[in-house]
Length: 335
Image (cartoon, rainbow, N blue to C red; front, side):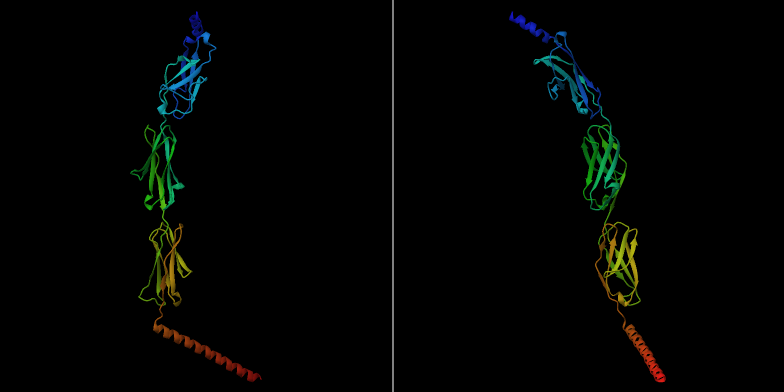
């Protein structure tokens, strides 16, 4: 009698339910969401039974496990999620049905429109500064492998794989030899996509210049033409050179294509002193060491100079005496 009663009570639960699992969309793109729905058909006598559902990925339960919701949303799927899925339903702790497994095919999108950008922008950087090469893809899904190349022949600099459409390669301290053309490639397994070439220019600050003083003879005497030559061993053009005697500016001379520059002076006795020059290409000025110049007046020139001075003094004295006598005569005549 008791066994019969148990059978009558269990009968509505023992008849299996029909479960059908669907996925929306059925062929999702990598990185997009998928909704799994477990549709259930129950016998009329089980219409009021409270069911719980669980979704499985290759026979492994998906979070959050058993729940009363017949739907499960997966926030993002990737190519490795292209496996079989199924669902189960239970009532009062007993399984009442299982769906047939379905296959979800996750679609991968090839990377496209790859470009290379630089920081600082424009590819203009000063020697010693940091340069960042940024490789960007306009679209694509999945893990992307980025490769950076130097020069038209494609010297490989760096390779990175990450689930992103942007990656960076950094040169912490740029050298003059890093002035070159660069490009990058991005590949998510569907074939590489290349960027265009980007030119990088490296501006070199001027080094300390060297001042040389050239004269026609062994000694510098008044009347000589003095050439001041200033040249910085390193530095990107254009360079502006300035020349000084002490702290007095004598003039300037440009070097549009680099190299050195000169300034010519006609020597007088006042040109004795310390000379220096300065080089400046807009990245910081550098000044040379001082060069001392002594202007020698020859002995014959000194005698001629003394005679001219004495003659000048006598002429001045004679004129003064004549003027004085004239004044005395005029006074006597008037008085």
